[in-house]
Amino acid sequence: MSIFGNNILGNSIFGNKAADPAPEAPEAEPAVQKTDAEWREELTPEEYHVLRQSGTERPYTGEYWDTHTAGVYHCRACGTELFTSNEKFDSHCGWPSFWAPLADGTVRYIHDRTLGMERVEVRCATCDSHLGHVFGGEGYGTPTDQRYCINSVSLKLVPRQDPQASAPDADA
Image (cartoon, rainbow, N blue to C red; front, side, top):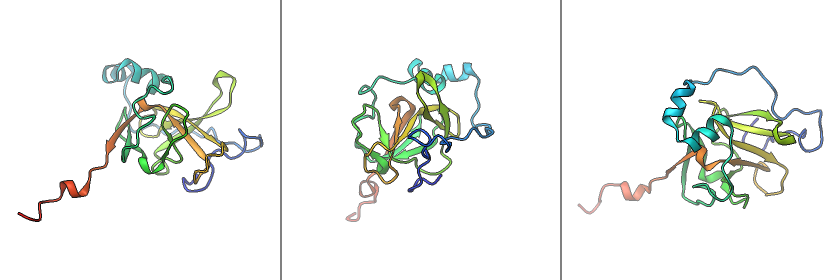
C-alpha cells in the first residue's frame, strides 16, 4: 500500500470485484481515545458532525478547497500530520484533494457502502476521525491516479515558514 505508485484501491470498485480495496482487517485501537462527551466538548458542532459522525461539509464552502498555501495539513481532532501541500492538487470537486497521504500509516481505509455506493473511507489512523474518501481511476494524471477527497473541517493547515524570514540578520 505504498503512497508512491501502488493503487490502494486495487480494481474492485472500478471493475474487478475479486480484488478487495480495503480489507476488513482486525482494527488496532487508535492511539488517541476519548469519550463522546470529550469529543463534543473539544470540537465545534460542525467538526464533531464530520470527524466523529462521518458527515460531509458542503462542497466549495470549506476553508481549504481552493487554498494554495505551502504547508502540512494536520488532523483537526488530534494534530497528526496527514497530508502536505506538495500532494494537493486542483480537482475542482469542491473539497481539498490530495494524490497521497504524507506517509504510510497516517490514515486508514475502510469500506463505505452508504448511499448505495461502494467507496473507500479515509480515517485518521491516530484518533479514528473521519476525513473523507479516496477515489481512483478518474484520470487526473497524478502520480498515484488517486484523489483523496478530504473535508476541510477535518484538517488544520500549518503553513510552511519561510526559512529566510526566520534566519538571523546577517548584516547585524
